[in-house]
Length: 492
Image (cartoon, rainbow, N blue to C red; front, side):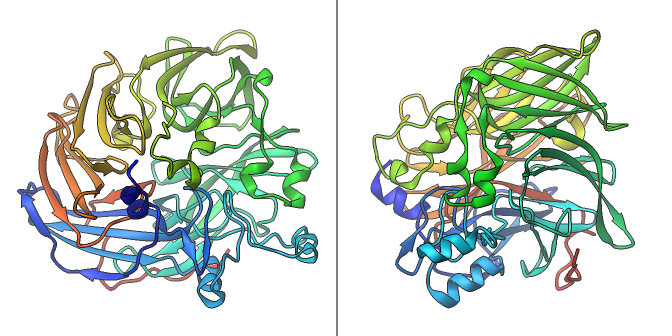
């Protein structure tokens, strides 16, 4: 990756504010009306200090509101304690994924009792129980107003946050949301919570719990029609190491491939453990879909042979223009649902294309066996060094791949937006939205692709670069985006 790309994508955002109208090239279809909000780091530097990893940094939200072919834009840092104290003191003050504050020996000892885990909810976002939440793996989720991007409160699954981490990809069924919280203790637990709207505020109740001695690093989990699926990769931790917190969070975990990967299957309706299924060791950040068919359970993930991808995201590695990112591949695992409570999970690679930050039409096709398309960032076969530089669409059923690629452009997560009143059979009848960094121009643009042909339809240019981020969501219900109307602050 050329050095200028690194400086553009992993540096710091110098401005916050709003642009009422972006310059649009091409024509955005009139039916596209709503708001794309993207989450991610807004800076990798505080004072003279630099964060160490792509998953560090201070959270910033980006809003693209689209109406009648026009696009407005706004960006704002989440007003978290991690951000506010960093600004006030001019240094990193909270522990992040792979960075810790510089502390004296005495301060490190005291950190055992107060580790100052970040509340910088920079990874994902969702509308849960009527509220907009910026999500992170830390137990504090930050509520925000989708129009002003102001931080308006927090939500947490339990009153105490110490010794907990969550996944950043909750699942949804009707008006209910589900998420997995890992509770670290002498006997750690994977706890699954249901979140509902209780008189205008989100309320969580635990519906399943699984005890483990050496919990794994979990970024997401699976959900089919009747089951929750916890893919427990052999990147595991001794809970005492996390409770002491003498190293940054992820550096307490160890890769132990002899354990293999364990799939824990839990009944969604009664919370009981259905069974454990074992496979060879592999690692994944992202579950894609899970479904049941003819007495078997199928789980699709973007899988890596090991956890080396985490090391590849350290900034000193990404700064090396010869660095090659490992490939994550679309892989399907199948497990029998009848008979023994323990068995084998058999894996099959459905596509050898590089895949990360996968997205599909979740609302219509989650838990369905007949879904066909996954949209992801990828690496061009002739330009494998550097960072993700193309978008691909993978046909899950045939393995066919089509792509969008433009030299010196680095796209972010592709978000699928379905055309209103599209036919059930036309799964890709819609648009793809992605924030792209143009290294030649030194700025970013919102890319609009036709999801069926994967051809560019339009782009809306920004006057500045957007740092490399993670996940976003599109809200097209006019009741969901009301200018000037803020959600009320919540306290757990």
